[in-house]
Image 1 (cartoon, rainbow, N blue to C red):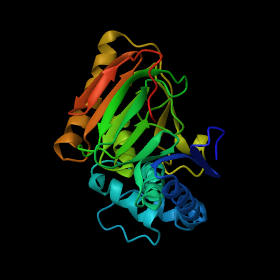
Image 2 (cartoon, one colour):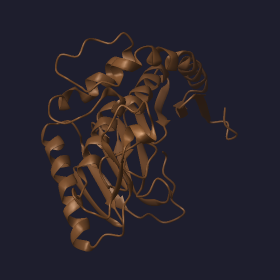
Image 3 (cartoon, helix red, strand yellow):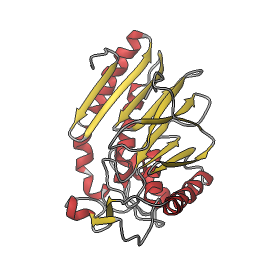
Image 4 (cartoon, rainbow, N blue to C red):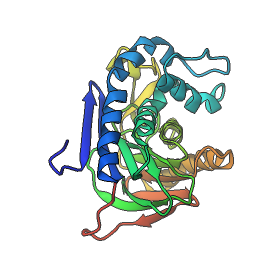
Length: 286
């Protein structure tokens, strides 16, 4: 338990979860115990299927043995044959979804599992969450918030971009996706962040993913390492490309909303409530 006595911290290798459940005290204790039990051995189980999880999504992918691995594959399946993506694009969100599933029991009114910014949410009737938005994960600062309530379909939040902890093919500082599940949001954030781009721009520094991380699922694909200060026209063009992709995912029912950020410029699509920079005394729930 963290020092505040409310939140549970679970960590194993690269998986680092912050969990909070609200409700009846006995139910919360039971939920935390169940989450810890479900978490034990999860990383080893995923590693056992890692080779297959690093292969590009395709329509005839075989079934995976572990439910998290299968959830990862299901999240990227809509993009099979359209773009390069592997189930690893949804790993953080899929893990959050799995642990949240273990948390839910009678007496829990709301809960979240935050896996490095990819968040799975549980909301009972009448409950709501305020989720903070950042435009630069490498220099975290709140630039706004998303209001999520039980009446809406959003139960997953994920953020991707070249400044984050994972590689990106695009130049977005951050793309935050709201979706029905965290795994879906995770995959979609990767796709939209990759689309925020200026192909051929000479000032953008890129490098083969395998040169930076030999076992990367992106192989020889060129990932973004540095982006120069862009002019207004270039920022608008790159964000426009990302918005086109986000609108396509929205029309297919894959996501509920998206907020895109590039060098101080922002744009959003979807019906969710995105609120701009909030007063300092207001703090989000997640």
